[in-house]
Length: 389
Image (cartoon, rainbow, N blue to C red):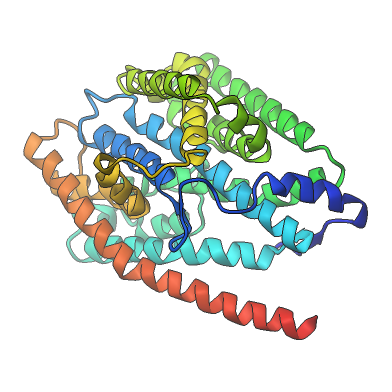
């Protein structure tokens, strides 16, 4: 666990200025749940794209990665906001509390997912993982957030989607400390610029290496944190400069144009052929999707009115998006005999319905326990902090 790093006295105005852009009640925010309905709609659309990509991969060839890119931009925006509020109030990032909150949010659903996977494969061996002797390795990669990295052992297809969670958690091991240092020296713009440049350079080197030296390694390059980490940087930049960015989209005509243009871009990329192995998508489609996702995040986060009632299904889907993302791929594998090829329409529809059922159950059971645990942790944490002050 990283030690807590304080922001120096000289940095106090800088930290306060940056976090004023992140603090306070967001427009359109539900005060009781502290959730943004507009961002839940965006989450719902993102996980919906992933479900389409998993269920009809031949038709929606770019849907999965488009949904993932939206999630990355959203994550960078929201988590950087959490960090900025911590710096505003405490002049430091409380690393213990930050990572504890991440654990309470992510681990309950992940533990139940990997636990049920292990039970099913140990008893029924639907995917042949028991016969291959890879269940233990799969659990190690899943719990260790290692699925995005080249590993010296084989793991199950069942945890394929966990590569995105690994990318996020590895990013958030280093981003809080970098953010504190940047705010202390009033160099947040340099942090964004250098981070984006480094990630883009590494991505370029990886993709060119794949094309020139080892075309068969595209699946490894695809999941590397350097390949799509730029989306997290884009979301973080939006949060750091949200007052300025919100001002850009304050006019109704520009908001409508941004909404329409972004939807058209993302909807078009959903059909991008072989997006997960195409250099054109890495260098053109991916950045376009990040830009469109950034516009949608700004529009959703700066919205002052309640979302239209017809978006309610997407809001609900966004609420359970984490578990839906975890479960959909393995549900398809189990229903289709371990394969995602040539999915019968009935299997695709059944997998989506079963995924949604499992996601709702997860939200109201294990994820609820995580929320309760987080609240109790905060009570104890604040009591200890009060006794030390």
